[in-house]
Amino acid sequence: MPTGSDKNPAILLVDDVPANLVTLRAVLSSLNEPLVEASSGTEALRILLRRDFACVLLDVEMPGLDGFEIANLLKKTERTKHIPILFLTAAERNEAHVVRGYAEGAVDFIVKPFNPDIVRAKVKVFVDLHRRAEAMRQREAVLREREREIERRQALERERAVQRAGEERLRLALDAASLGTWELDPKTMTFRCDARAKTLLGLGSRAVVDHVTFQRCIHPEDLARVEADMKAALTPGEFGLSDLEYRVVGEGGEWVRWRRSTGRAYFEGGEPVRLIGTLQDITDRKLAEAERAKLLAREVEARADAERHIMRLQQVETELQEAVCARDEFLSVASHELRTPLTPLLLKLQTMRRALDASYDAMPVPSSLAKSFATCETQVRRMSALVTDLLDVTRLSQGRLTLKLEAVDMREVIDEVANTLAPQAAKSNSTIEVETDGPVEGLWDRLRLNQLITNLVSNALKYGAGKPVRVRLDSDSTEAILEVSDQGIGIPAQHIPRLFGKFQRAVSERNYGGLGLGLYISRQIVEAMGGCIGVESEPGHGATFTVRLPVHAAEARSAICAPAAEAANGLNF
Image (cartoon, rainbow, N blue to C red; front, side):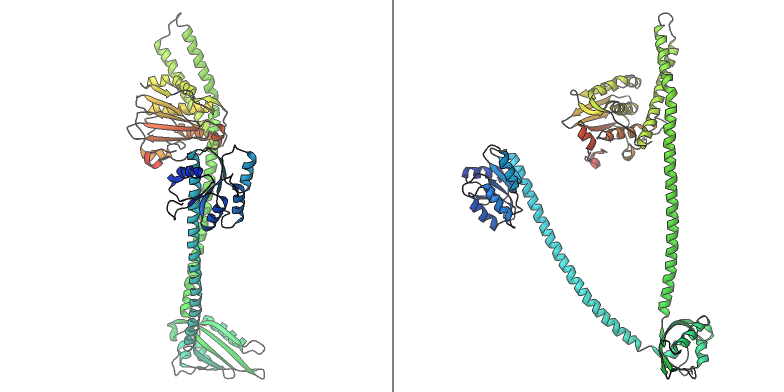
């Protein structure tokens, strides 16, 4: 018996054991979809021919037609060949049965006893797919109906176009009734014109139109063309046709109008006897053509200006790219050159400091001298860190940042950073609080991971207003989650989108040092290891930087970090 609404996609349950059907119904009833039962293969085939189903749960071992035979018949029938089949069997998993099942068109092979949640989830997938397919078929039907409607409209439009063409021919015929007509006698070179033709030539209705009068009506610049056209039309052996556009002028040149004259010459005995034709006013068309020509000229000029502007922009872009390359090259060379003397200088300071410490018992060192050595060593280390940042930026710009992936315990790296930065924390009247539940191992670059955590903790100490900095490490089976939080000045919302950019700062450089490269380098390191980094902050309430890094090599190469509630909570993953 089916249950649920007939509008929902139905599920067919086929098993010769009633208890198994009861079990399947109990497992799938929570889907609220129609459930149809069949206790034999023959009954299942009859039901399938009458109704569509989202999927079929089919027992393999049945008397009469078994599950494999039923599947084979379904796949041979056009109506049922696309219905997903999930085989059910109480026998132990047999590879031959599995292979045969898939060969017969099954989409899954479930061994009893089965997990109800898994079976329910699999069936729900096929129900959802069926529902989507049905929705798509309905949309296709709507689209086909729309296409037919468009075809009907196009046919109607063609009929209307034919009707408009007939109306246009009628209009032209009506216009032809107002055309001026003229006839030229080649022997006397006199014209016989109707009233309309005389008006178009700018003459009175009683005017006598001889050759001289006709010439006075023609614009001087067009007269030679008109005479040549008439001569050619009256020449034996030519086609005897005349079609010319020219200007006529009013008496005294007070107005100028465009006319089109068409005519045909008739000959007798090889001599022209008359030239007859029509005269039409085409002033509006010629003015429109002139206006279009002006617009076209302006458009051509505008396009030329645009092309010149684009070429200039391309040139500027090339120059900017060259400038950026030159800058990166300069930074690379300068970083190497600055780094060369800094390393031995730092080693020399450390050697001198150890020598002073060794000789303290024999000859006490003034506290001011010891403090000066400590200051020098701190400044040299700071200078070395800035140079390292510049060198990393040039490597990133040139795509030369390489990773040495190895098994690393992130908790150990955090402890190393906390110990290294303990003097800086003490100097800023702050502390570094580390919260971890145990080792978190992953395939990462140890040095770059140390650099990343150092950047984040150093920033937290710098902007943390002397309050404790919290470093928390969590993990699951796929990724490590590192949070570095401070309770300092915070970050205004408008600065967060550009915070991880190159040379970007959210505070005035007069109050806080640095080049604005630490977070940029941190983001590049995180993304190079397949992770993502984001920040959540509120001015006056500190900031929390969150880093997510996959722990496995495959994930590190192909991880994709999706934005998580970015607009709601300010995170910039």
